[in-house]
Length: 256
Image (cartoon, rainbow, N blue to C red; front, top):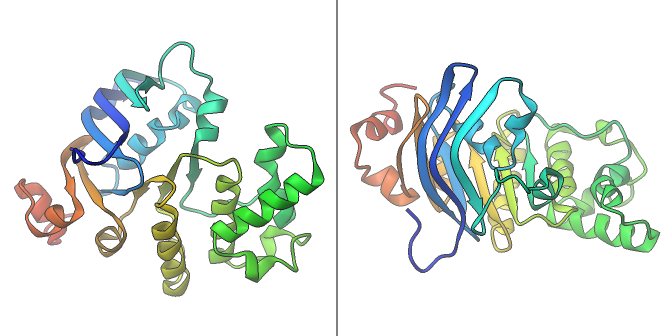
């Protein structure tokens, strides 16, 4: 659980999620801190990506999903009746495993969210685009190519443009689902460096299969298995002195 000197941003209580009759997540209870990086690890199909998507209600888009329990952000239940999901997703940005830039210019990719949210002034949009690309550590690489298609960039650059796009609406939380799994080692290192810098202003939750990556970038780690959160603690404790044998076995490569 979160340490007392840190502010809890996301609190999950007795949370279950079902796809039809199949229970994908079982009784999750955990606190996730602001201004920290939390890694979710575990074998494929263990529920970690499903849980990540509950934090901005991406699972609402799948037929037959039912939930029990609650998830609160800043003490507000995001599954409450009066929650505006569009506003929620503005507050909770998401970056996916496969970079998914729109088939538009680099500029239009980053300006997309602010435009939808009513920003019309060209100077304001220019400022947001520049600031977001700088936050995503890619401004210097693309500043002379803003009107070119984002699809012409390398995989690592596309992923950073997607991070800039998520940053452009000024989120408080950034969810990252395997953000570097399709990238080469140099691009992966850039993304990890970027994640590290962003945590000063954000709560970041990252799903990763890469144990070394979790150990390198995160402050806290949660280990999922068969839809359950087996253990959640500081990353140091999880990797050096886990309480549960199943965590130990996964981390040491005995299964997964």
